[in-house]
Length: 289
Image: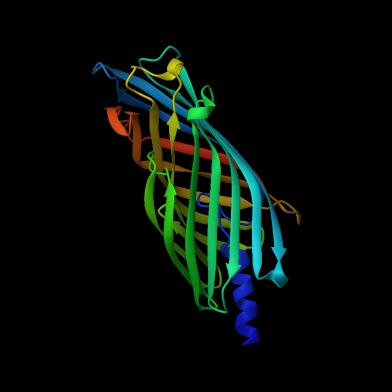
C-alpha cells in the first residue's frame, strides 16, 4: 500500500541509529566528566580515581536504489583519561578510533535489515598492531504500525567493557503526539517529550564502554594486556535548536548505575578495581543531516 510504504520510509530515516547516539546526527562533539570514586589497586590499597572523556563523530548518508538502500559512511573518535594506580603515569589515555559503516536495506514494506561494521583501534594507541579489532552488529526491524517499529538482532562489541556477543533489541515508538521512545538495548534507551519545535526534553539510560589494549607503559603487571571500562548512566537530557538551523546544543547528567573498571590478561580478569557509582555531566554540540 502506498501510504504504508511512505510511512515505512519515514520510519527508516528515523530509526537509522548509532548504538550510542540518535541517527539524525551528521556531526557530534561531546565532553563528559565523571565524579571521583574510590578504587582498589592490585596491592589492596584504596585510591581516588576520576574519568573524563570526549567523543567526535562524523558521517555522510547516501541513498541508493530509489531509497531502498541507505549507507552511512562515517568515523568516530572517543578518548578517555582515567586515573589508575600502579602505572608509570598518573593518568592513562584510552582511545577508540574507528570507521563507522552502516548499511540499511529495505526487504519489503514491513522489514528492513541493518548491518553495522566498526573496524578500528581500541587502546592506548602505543602498540596499534595489537589493538586493532572489528566490532559490529546486525538486526532486522519490523514496522508493526505507523507509530511502532521493533527489531531484534545480535552485536559483537565491548559496550560492557569486554568483547561479547550481545542480543540487540531496537524499539522506535510514538505512543503520543509529543512523546517519542527510541531505544537500542542494551546500548541506550531514550524517552523524549517534544513540547515545541526545537526543544526536546527526555530521560536517558545508556551504556558506554570498551575493552582497551594496553602497551607496556600502561600495564601495572606483566600479565595484564587490557583494561575493561564501562559506565551505565541514568538521567535527564535536553536538546535545543537555536534558530531554524540544523545545529543543536545538548546536555545531560545524572548518576551512574553500574560501572566496570578491570585489568585483564589473556581474556581473564586479573584485578577488579571496583569503582563506585558517581554523578556525571555531559555537554555537546551536533549538526543534523
